[in-house]
Image (cartoon, rainbow over all chains, first blue to last red; front, top):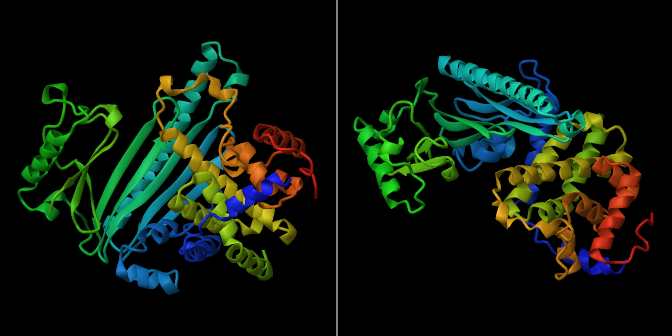
Length: 278
Length: 163
Protein backbone atom coordinates (compact mmCIF):
# COMPACT_ATOMS: atom_id res chain seq x y z
CA UNK A 1 0.00 0.00 0.00
CA UNK A 2 2.64 2.46 -1.03
CA UNK A 3 0.09 4.96 -2.19
CA UNK A 4 -0.81 5.49 1.41
CA UNK A 5 2.69 6.41 2.45
CA UNK A 6 2.33 9.91 1.04
CA UNK A 7 -1.22 10.22 2.22
CA UNK A 8 -0.07 9.28 5.68
CA UNK A 9 2.78 11.79 5.61
CA UNK A 10 0.34 14.45 4.59
CA UNK A 11 -2.05 13.40 7.34
CA UNK A 12 0.71 13.44 9.91
CA UNK A 13 1.78 16.92 8.90
CA UNK A 14 -1.44 18.33 10.42
CA UNK A 15 -0.19 21.08 12.73
CA UNK A 16 -0.78 20.34 16.40
CA UNK A 17 -2.05 23.32 18.44
CA UNK A 18 0.02 24.30 21.43
CA UNK A 19 -2.88 24.12 23.84
CA UNK A 20 -3.67 20.50 22.99
CA UNK A 21 -1.76 19.21 26.00
CA UNK A 22 -3.58 21.47 28.44
CA UNK A 23 -6.91 20.54 26.85
CA UNK A 24 -6.19 16.82 27.23
CA UNK A 25 -5.20 17.34 30.86
CA UNK A 26 -8.33 19.40 31.46
CA UNK A 27 -10.36 16.55 29.96
CA UNK A 28 -8.69 14.10 32.29
CA UNK A 29 -9.45 16.27 35.33
CA UNK A 30 -13.08 16.68 34.31
CA UNK A 31 -13.50 13.01 33.62
CA UNK A 32 -11.93 11.97 36.90
CA UNK A 33 -14.27 14.28 38.71
CA UNK A 34 -17.22 12.87 36.80
CA UNK A 35 -16.38 9.27 37.54
CA UNK A 36 -15.96 9.90 41.25
CA UNK A 37 -18.63 12.45 42.05
CA UNK A 38 -22.15 11.45 42.68
CA UNK A 39 -24.39 14.44 43.11
CA UNK A 40 -27.97 14.18 44.24
CA UNK A 41 -27.85 10.49 43.57
CA UNK A 42 -28.16 11.07 39.83
CA UNK A 43 -26.57 8.36 37.81
CA UNK A 44 -27.80 8.80 34.28
CA UNK A 45 -26.09 7.03 31.43
CA UNK A 46 -22.46 7.92 31.46
CA UNK A 47 -22.85 9.58 34.80
CA UNK A 48 -22.32 13.04 36.01
CA UNK A 49 -19.71 15.36 34.64
CA UNK A 50 -19.53 18.01 37.28
CA UNK A 51 -18.41 21.38 36.09
CA UNK A 52 -17.44 20.14 32.66
CA UNK A 53 -18.79 23.16 30.86
CA UNK A 54 -17.44 25.62 33.35
CA UNK A 55 -13.99 24.26 32.71
CA UNK A 56 -14.40 24.59 28.98
CA UNK A 57 -16.28 27.84 28.83
CA UNK A 58 -15.17 29.67 31.89
CA UNK A 59 -11.40 29.50 31.84
CA UNK A 60 -10.80 32.93 30.43
CA UNK A 61 -13.78 34.51 32.06
CA UNK A 62 -13.17 34.94 35.75
CA UNK A 63 -9.69 35.52 37.10
CA UNK A 64 -10.62 33.75 40.31
CA UNK A 65 -11.80 30.85 38.31
CA UNK A 66 -8.75 30.62 36.07
CA UNK A 67 -6.49 30.69 39.09
CA UNK A 68 -8.53 28.08 40.90
CA UNK A 69 -8.85 25.78 37.92
CA UNK A 70 -5.14 25.74 37.28
CA UNK A 71 -4.38 23.68 40.34
CA UNK A 72 -7.51 22.20 41.91
CA UNK A 73 -10.80 21.30 40.30
CA UNK A 74 -12.71 23.08 43.08
CA UNK A 75 -13.71 26.60 42.20
CA UNK A 76 -13.44 29.62 44.41
CA UNK A 77 -15.92 32.42 44.71
CA UNK A 78 -19.55 32.57 45.70
CA UNK A 79 -21.00 30.05 43.35
CA UNK A 80 -20.42 27.58 40.58
CA UNK A 81 -22.37 26.28 37.65
CA UNK A 82 -22.36 22.51 37.62
CA UNK A 83 -23.61 19.99 35.14
CA UNK A 84 -26.05 17.91 37.14
CA UNK A 85 -27.36 15.72 34.41
CA UNK A 86 -25.16 14.82 31.52
CA UNK A 87 -25.99 11.85 29.40
CA UNK A 88 -26.25 10.63 25.88
CA UNK A 89 -28.92 8.07 25.28
CA UNK A 90 -29.46 6.47 21.93
CA UNK A 91 -32.00 3.79 21.28
CA UNK A 92 -31.25 3.92 17.58
CA UNK A 93 -34.09 6.27 16.84
CA UNK A 94 -34.49 8.82 19.57
CA UNK A 95 -31.08 10.23 20.41
CA UNK A 96 -30.86 12.32 23.52
CA UNK A 97 -27.94 14.54 24.36
CA UNK A 98 -28.69 16.13 27.65
CA UNK A 99 -26.51 18.41 29.67
CA UNK A 100 -28.36 20.25 32.42
CA UNK A 101 -26.79 23.02 34.48
CA UNK A 102 -27.39 23.80 38.10
CA UNK A 103 -26.42 26.91 40.02
CA UNK A 104 -24.60 25.81 43.12
CA UNK A 105 -24.90 28.71 45.57
CA UNK A 106 -26.50 29.77 48.82
CA UNK A 107 -29.82 31.57 48.66
CA UNK A 108 -33.32 31.21 47.29
CA UNK A 109 -32.53 32.47 43.83
CA UNK A 110 -30.30 29.52 42.96
CA UNK A 111 -32.93 27.05 44.17
CA UNK A 112 -35.67 28.79 42.27
CA UNK A 113 -33.63 28.86 39.07
CA UNK A 114 -32.63 25.22 39.45
CA UNK A 115 -36.22 24.14 39.97
CA UNK A 116 -37.31 26.09 36.92
CA UNK A 117 -34.58 24.61 34.74
CA UNK A 118 -35.44 21.13 35.96
CA UNK A 119 -39.09 21.66 35.14
CA UNK A 120 -38.41 23.02 31.68
CA UNK A 121 -36.04 20.18 30.84
CA UNK A 122 -38.49 17.52 32.02
CA UNK A 123 -41.26 19.17 30.01
CA UNK A 124 -39.06 19.32 26.96
CA UNK A 125 -38.09 15.64 27.15
CA UNK A 126 -41.70 14.62 27.71
CA UNK A 127 -42.91 16.79 24.86
CA UNK A 128 -40.29 15.39 22.50
CA UNK A 129 -41.36 11.86 23.38
CA UNK A 130 -44.98 12.82 22.74
CA UNK A 131 -44.16 14.34 19.36
CA UNK A 132 -42.28 11.20 18.44
CA UNK A 133 -45.15 8.92 19.40
CA UNK A 134 -47.79 11.07 17.75
CA UNK A 135 -45.76 11.19 14.58
CA UNK A 136 -45.32 7.44 14.65
CA UNK A 137 -49.08 6.96 14.80
CA UNK A 138 -49.65 9.44 11.99
CA UNK A 139 -46.92 7.83 9.93
CA UNK A 140 -48.43 4.36 10.22
CA UNK A 141 -51.98 5.69 9.74
CA UNK A 142 -50.98 7.28 6.44
CA UNK A 143 -49.60 4.05 5.03
CA UNK A 144 -46.03 4.03 6.30
CA UNK A 145 -44.61 0.68 7.36
CA UNK A 146 -42.82 -0.10 10.61
CA UNK A 147 -39.80 -0.91 8.51
CA UNK A 148 -39.73 2.58 7.00
CA UNK A 149 -40.36 4.01 10.41
CA UNK A 150 -37.31 2.29 11.81
CA UNK A 151 -35.17 4.43 9.48
CA UNK A 152 -36.35 7.60 11.16
CA UNK A 153 -34.41 9.41 13.82
CA UNK A 154 -34.99 12.27 16.17
CA UNK A 155 -32.40 14.20 18.13
CA UNK A 156 -33.33 15.75 21.42
CA UNK A 157 -30.75 18.07 22.92
CA UNK A 158 -30.49 20.02 26.09
CA UNK A 159 -27.42 22.14 26.50
CA UNK A 160 -26.24 25.27 28.13
CA UNK A 161 -23.66 27.95 27.58
CA UNK A 162 -22.17 30.43 29.99
CA UNK A 163 -22.14 33.81 28.32
CA UNK A 164 -20.23 35.67 30.98
CA UNK A 165 -19.25 35.35 34.57
CA UNK A 166 -17.78 37.54 37.28
CA UNK A 167 -17.09 36.74 40.92
CA UNK A 168 -20.68 37.57 41.84
CA UNK A 169 -22.75 37.33 38.67
CA UNK A 170 -23.36 34.86 35.88
CA UNK A 171 -25.17 35.02 32.59
CA UNK A 172 -26.03 31.78 30.84
CA UNK A 173 -28.46 30.27 28.37
CA UNK A 174 -30.16 26.89 28.37
CA UNK A 175 -30.99 25.65 24.88
CA UNK A 176 -33.40 22.83 24.21
CA UNK A 177 -33.92 21.50 20.72
CA UNK A 178 -35.72 18.69 19.03
CA UNK A 179 -35.63 18.07 15.31
CA UNK A 180 -38.54 15.89 14.34
CA UNK A 181 -40.34 17.88 11.68
CA UNK A 182 -40.80 21.27 13.26
CA UNK A 183 -37.25 21.97 14.36
CA UNK A 184 -38.25 23.03 17.81
CA UNK A 185 -35.90 25.30 19.65
CA UNK A 186 -36.34 26.88 23.03
CA UNK A 187 -33.81 29.13 24.71
CA UNK A 188 -34.00 30.49 28.22
CA UNK A 189 -31.60 33.15 29.39
CA UNK A 190 -30.59 33.55 33.01
CA UNK A 191 -28.80 36.61 34.38
CA UNK A 192 -28.15 36.19 38.06
CA UNK A 193 -26.59 38.36 40.69
CA UNK A 194 -25.59 35.74 43.22
CA UNK A 195 -24.29 38.22 45.80
CA UNK A 196 -27.61 40.10 45.88
CA UNK A 197 -29.59 36.87 45.41
CA UNK A 198 -31.67 38.36 42.61
CA UNK A 199 -32.17 38.36 38.85
CA UNK A 200 -30.37 41.05 36.93
CA UNK A 201 -32.83 43.15 34.94
CA UNK A 202 -32.20 45.39 31.98
CA UNK A 203 -32.98 48.32 34.25
CA UNK A 204 -30.16 47.23 36.58
CA UNK A 205 -27.67 47.38 33.76
CA UNK A 206 -28.96 50.24 31.63
CA UNK A 207 -30.73 52.44 34.16
CA UNK A 208 -34.24 53.89 34.24
CA UNK A 209 -34.27 54.70 30.58
CA UNK A 210 -33.63 51.09 29.58
CA UNK A 211 -36.69 50.74 27.36
CA UNK A 212 -35.71 53.69 25.18
CA UNK A 213 -32.06 52.68 25.06
CA UNK A 214 -32.93 49.17 23.93
CA UNK A 215 -35.57 50.27 21.45
CA UNK A 216 -33.15 52.74 19.89
CA UNK A 217 -30.51 50.03 19.56
CA UNK A 218 -32.97 47.61 17.97
CA UNK A 219 -34.34 50.26 15.60
CA UNK A 220 -30.84 51.24 14.48
CA UNK A 221 -30.03 47.59 13.93
CA UNK A 222 -33.15 47.02 11.86
CA UNK A 223 -32.58 50.23 9.87
CA UNK A 224 -29.09 49.11 8.96
CA UNK A 225 -30.26 45.65 7.96
CA UNK A 226 -29.96 44.79 4.30
CA UNK A 227 -31.41 41.27 4.33
CA UNK A 228 -35.01 42.49 4.28
CA UNK A 229 -35.96 39.71 6.68
CA UNK A 230 -37.28 41.94 9.45
CA UNK A 231 -41.04 42.25 9.70
CA UNK A 232 -42.47 45.75 9.37
CA UNK A 233 -44.64 47.10 12.18
CA UNK A 234 -47.91 46.08 10.48
CA UNK A 235 -46.55 42.61 9.78
CA UNK A 236 -46.21 42.16 13.52
CA UNK A 237 -42.60 43.25 13.69
CA UNK A 238 -40.67 44.86 16.49
CA UNK A 239 -42.49 47.40 18.61
CA UNK A 240 -40.80 47.60 21.99
CA UNK A 241 -38.75 45.63 24.48
CA UNK A 242 -40.29 44.76 27.82
CA UNK A 243 -39.53 42.80 31.00
CA UNK A 244 -39.88 39.55 29.10
CA UNK A 245 -37.29 40.39 26.45
CA UNK A 246 -34.40 37.94 26.64
CA UNK A 247 -30.87 39.18 27.00
CA UNK A 248 -27.47 38.18 28.21
CA UNK A 249 -24.46 40.01 29.58
CA UNK A 250 -21.19 40.03 27.72
CA UNK A 251 -17.83 39.76 29.38
CA UNK A 252 -17.38 43.52 29.21
CA UNK A 253 -20.69 43.97 31.03
CA UNK A 254 -22.60 45.14 27.95
CA UNK A 255 -26.01 43.78 27.01
CA UNK A 256 -27.04 41.69 24.02
CA UNK A 257 -30.77 41.37 23.36
CA UNK A 258 -32.07 38.10 21.98
CA UNK A 259 -35.20 37.67 19.91
CA UNK A 260 -36.41 34.13 19.19
CA UNK A 261 -37.06 32.95 15.67
CA UNK A 262 -40.14 34.47 13.99
CA UNK A 263 -40.69 37.13 16.65
CA UNK A 264 -39.31 40.14 14.81
CA UNK A 265 -38.00 38.66 11.58
CA UNK A 266 -38.65 35.84 9.13
CA UNK A 267 -37.51 32.38 10.17
CA UNK A 268 -34.54 32.57 7.82
CA UNK A 269 -33.02 35.22 10.07
CA UNK A 270 -32.92 32.65 12.88
CA UNK A 271 -32.44 33.84 16.39
CA UNK A 272 -31.66 37.55 16.23
CA UNK A 273 -29.06 38.93 18.63
CA UNK A 274 -28.75 42.69 18.91
CA UNK A 275 -26.00 44.31 20.96
CA UNK A 276 -26.85 47.37 23.00
CA UNK A 277 -23.99 49.81 23.38
CA UNK A 278 -23.41 50.45 27.09
CA UNK B 1 -11.16 0.01 37.31
CA UNK B 2 -7.98 -0.28 39.25
CA UNK B 3 -5.66 2.63 39.87
CA UNK B 4 -3.03 0.94 37.72
CA UNK B 5 -5.38 0.78 34.77
CA UNK B 6 -6.41 4.37 35.32
CA UNK B 7 -2.77 5.42 35.30
CA UNK B 8 -2.29 3.46 32.11
CA UNK B 9 -5.29 5.17 30.57
CA UNK B 10 -4.20 8.69 31.47
CA UNK B 11 -0.63 8.00 30.33
CA UNK B 12 -1.95 6.76 27.02
CA UNK B 13 -4.22 9.76 26.58
CA UNK B 14 -1.39 12.19 27.24
CA UNK B 15 1.18 10.35 25.12
CA UNK B 16 -0.96 9.83 22.05
CA UNK B 17 -2.73 13.20 22.14
CA UNK B 18 -1.32 14.35 18.79
CA UNK B 19 -2.82 11.28 17.10
CA UNK B 20 -6.23 12.03 18.60
CA UNK B 21 -6.09 15.62 17.48
CA UNK B 22 -5.10 14.68 13.93
CA UNK B 23 -7.92 12.18 13.67
CA UNK B 24 -10.45 14.65 15.07
CA UNK B 25 -9.15 17.35 12.75
CA UNK B 26 -9.48 15.05 9.74
CA UNK B 27 -13.22 14.86 10.41
CA UNK B 28 -13.95 18.37 11.54
CA UNK B 29 -11.40 20.48 9.64
CA UNK B 30 -11.62 23.07 12.36
CA UNK B 31 -8.96 23.66 14.96
CA UNK B 32 -11.25 24.71 17.81
CA UNK B 33 -13.80 22.00 17.18
CA UNK B 34 -11.09 19.37 16.97
CA UNK B 35 -9.65 20.54 20.30
CA UNK B 36 -13.12 20.44 21.85
CA UNK B 37 -13.69 16.96 20.46
CA UNK B 38 -10.45 15.62 21.92
CA UNK B 39 -11.17 17.16 25.30
CA UNK B 40 -14.71 15.79 25.33
CA UNK B 41 -13.55 12.32 24.32
CA UNK B 42 -10.85 12.32 27.00
CA UNK B 43 -13.37 13.45 29.60
CA UNK B 44 -15.79 10.73 28.54
CA UNK B 45 -13.08 8.09 28.58
CA UNK B 46 -12.29 8.86 32.21
CA UNK B 47 -15.97 8.84 33.10
CA UNK B 48 -16.55 5.52 31.43
CA UNK B 49 -13.32 3.93 32.50
CA UNK B 50 -15.18 1.24 34.45
CA UNK B 51 -16.34 -0.14 31.10
CA UNK B 52 -12.78 -0.85 30.07
CA UNK B 53 -11.89 -4.27 31.34
CA UNK B 54 -8.81 -5.09 29.40
CA UNK B 55 -5.86 -2.79 28.80
CA UNK B 56 -5.13 -4.59 25.51
CA UNK B 57 -8.32 -3.11 24.10
CA UNK B 58 -7.52 0.38 25.31
CA UNK B 59 -6.71 1.90 21.95
CA UNK B 60 -9.74 0.60 20.08
CA UNK B 61 -11.94 1.51 23.04
CA UNK B 62 -10.74 5.09 23.09
CA UNK B 63 -10.94 5.55 19.32
CA UNK B 64 -14.51 4.34 19.57
CA UNK B 65 -15.30 7.22 21.93
CA UNK B 66 -13.36 9.77 19.89
CA UNK B 67 -14.92 8.79 16.56
CA UNK B 68 -18.38 8.95 18.12
CA UNK B 69 -17.74 12.44 19.44
CA UNK B 70 -16.59 13.59 16.00
CA UNK B 71 -19.58 11.97 14.28
CA UNK B 72 -21.88 13.73 16.72
CA UNK B 73 -20.37 17.06 15.81
CA UNK B 74 -20.78 16.29 12.11
CA UNK B 75 -24.37 15.22 12.62
CA UNK B 76 -25.13 18.34 14.59
CA UNK B 77 -23.59 20.43 11.84
CA UNK B 78 -25.63 18.70 9.19
CA UNK B 79 -28.74 19.62 11.07
CA UNK B 80 -28.07 23.34 10.95
CA UNK B 81 -26.85 23.43 7.38
CA UNK B 82 -29.58 24.45 5.02
CA UNK B 83 -29.13 23.29 1.47
CA UNK B 84 -31.58 24.60 -1.09
CA UNK B 85 -32.97 21.74 -3.20
CA UNK B 86 -31.51 23.13 -6.42
CA UNK B 87 -28.03 23.03 -4.93
CA UNK B 88 -28.27 19.28 -4.47
CA UNK B 89 -26.57 17.50 -7.30
CA UNK B 90 -28.60 14.43 -8.18
CA UNK B 91 -25.57 12.73 -9.65
CA UNK B 92 -23.56 13.17 -6.48
CA UNK B 93 -24.74 9.96 -4.94
CA UNK B 94 -23.27 7.91 -7.76
CA UNK B 95 -19.90 9.55 -7.81
CA UNK B 96 -19.16 11.56 -4.73
CA UNK B 97 -15.38 11.33 -5.19
CA UNK B 98 -13.46 14.21 -6.61
CA UNK B 99 -10.99 12.61 -8.97
CA UNK B 100 -8.31 15.19 -8.40
CA UNK B 101 -6.49 16.15 -5.23
CA UNK B 102 -3.96 14.11 -3.31
CA UNK B 103 -4.88 10.73 -1.94
CA UNK B 104 -5.13 12.25 1.54
CA UNK B 105 -7.65 14.80 0.29
CA UNK B 106 -9.63 12.12 -1.44
CA UNK B 107 -9.69 10.09 1.78
CA UNK B 108 -11.10 13.12 3.58
CA UNK B 109 -13.81 13.45 0.97
CA UNK B 110 -15.08 9.90 1.57
CA UNK B 111 -18.31 9.47 3.51
CA UNK B 112 -17.30 9.43 7.20
CA UNK B 113 -18.21 5.79 7.84
CA UNK B 114 -15.92 4.67 5.03
CA UNK B 115 -13.25 7.30 5.70
CA UNK B 116 -13.03 6.19 9.32
CA UNK B 117 -12.06 2.71 8.29
CA UNK B 118 -9.45 3.86 5.80
CA UNK B 119 -7.92 6.31 8.25
CA UNK B 120 -7.78 3.86 11.13
CA UNK B 121 -6.35 1.14 8.94
CA UNK B 122 -3.71 3.08 7.05
CA UNK B 123 -2.93 6.09 9.24
CA UNK B 124 -3.37 4.60 12.68
CA UNK B 125 -2.42 0.99 11.88
CA UNK B 126 -5.40 -0.55 13.61
CA UNK B 127 -6.25 -4.14 12.75
CA UNK B 128 -9.57 -4.84 11.07
CA UNK B 129 -10.74 -6.47 14.25
CA UNK B 130 -9.92 -3.35 16.26
CA UNK B 131 -11.67 -1.24 13.65
CA UNK B 132 -14.74 -3.36 14.05
CA UNK B 133 -14.67 -2.52 17.78
CA UNK B 134 -14.22 1.18 17.06
CA UNK B 135 -17.04 1.41 14.56
CA UNK B 136 -19.36 -1.07 16.20
CA UNK B 137 -19.75 -2.86 12.85
CA UNK B 138 -19.05 -6.52 12.43
CA UNK B 139 -15.88 -7.62 10.71
CA UNK B 140 -17.54 -8.33 7.38
CA UNK B 141 -19.11 -4.90 7.21
CA UNK B 142 -15.72 -3.39 7.94
CA UNK B 143 -14.16 -5.39 5.11
CA UNK B 144 -16.90 -4.51 2.67
CA UNK B 145 -16.60 -0.81 3.47
CA UNK B 146 -12.82 -0.94 3.33
CA UNK B 147 -12.90 -2.41 -0.18
CA UNK B 148 -15.62 -0.04 -1.29
CA UNK B 149 -13.50 2.84 -0.03
CA UNK B 150 -10.36 1.62 -1.73
CA UNK B 151 -12.25 1.17 -4.94
CA UNK B 152 -13.48 4.72 -4.78
CA UNK B 153 -9.97 5.89 -4.09
CA UNK B 154 -8.75 3.77 -6.99
CA UNK B 155 -5.80 2.33 -5.14
CA UNK B 156 -4.78 -1.30 -5.14
CA UNK B 157 -6.14 -3.55 -2.48
CA UNK B 158 -3.17 -5.73 -1.76
CA UNK B 159 -2.05 -5.72 1.81
CA UNK B 160 -5.27 -4.22 3.05
CA UNK B 161 -5.92 -7.20 5.25
CA UNK B 162 -2.45 -7.58 6.69
CA UNK B 163 -2.13 -7.94 10.45
